[in-house]
Length: 126
View 1: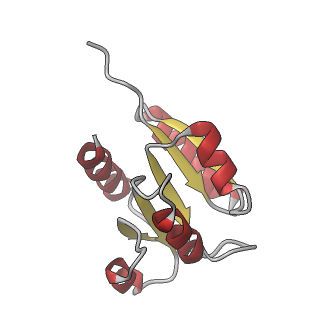
View 2 (view 1 turned 135 degrees about the horizontal axis):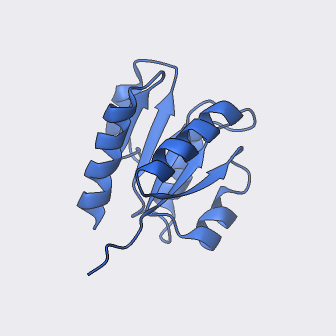
């Protein structure tokens, strides 16, 4: 029986990070959808039905923490695992807040560490 490909939505305003995530995650067998800002995230979620969202905290136009809260409080999207990614360290405490992300990874991140986090949340959600 063929395993269903998991789809990951990566949201970051840095094109180099999006390119790297796309390449690495695609190589690992994930289908990757990228978004360079948070303005159309709910439309993109509705169109692509991601299994997991990688979300930068400091986007040019919006705060990823606010986007995460909106995702977690929406009945249509609250079950999608969200991993916040940020160069701002010490954000681990946000994991305790209402509407919190499922996990947090600090930039620069070790790709094996990120992949293990993704794997954990996708298997937990399966």
